[in-house]
Structure formats: structure tokens, C-alpha cells
Length: 95
Image (tube, rainbow, N blue to C red; front, side, top):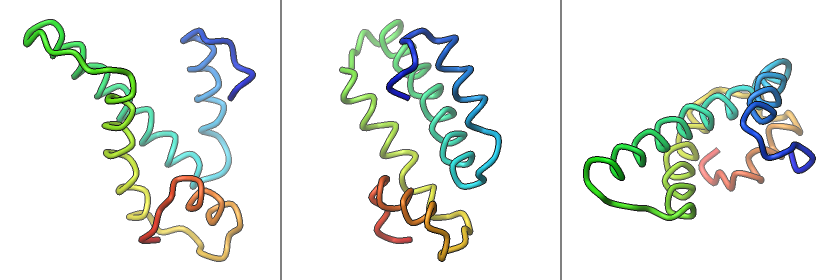
């Protein structure tokens, strides 16, 4: 994803393309996109109505805290190398 220009339309096109194919990755991307939309919307409302601001790092931590525990709840083939790689990347200890 490092080679994608930092424009929302290109990121969305990449994510839509990534949703096709590998099931475990599609689930992780869906969760991440949904959590990102929610937390950006929540931050927008906090800034407008409560005058509270969070940094990018705080929002990112909130997203990861929200997504990381949900991934192990799905049933994946444990002998799949790509699933093991995803588990290692996301640091999922309980899988």
C-alpha cells in the first residue's frame, strides 16, 4: 500500500480491489474500514460538539484496539500460511 498516492479515491479503489479474493484478508480489511469510518466520524463529532481533540496516534490506537480483538473470533484454517502471517502481523496472541 506504500505505492498508493495519498488521495482518498485511490485508497478506496485499492481497498475495493483488496476485498476480492483471499477471505481472511477481506474480513480484516472490512473490519478496519468500518472501524476507521466510525472513529473518524466519532472524532469529527467530538471536535464539533465537545471541542475535544485527539491526535492521529490516539485515533489509530482506538481503531486498532477496536479491530484487533474481533479478528480471532472468525474461523480460519489454522494450517494456512497466510492466516499465520496475518496473525503474526496483527500480533493476535489468542488465535
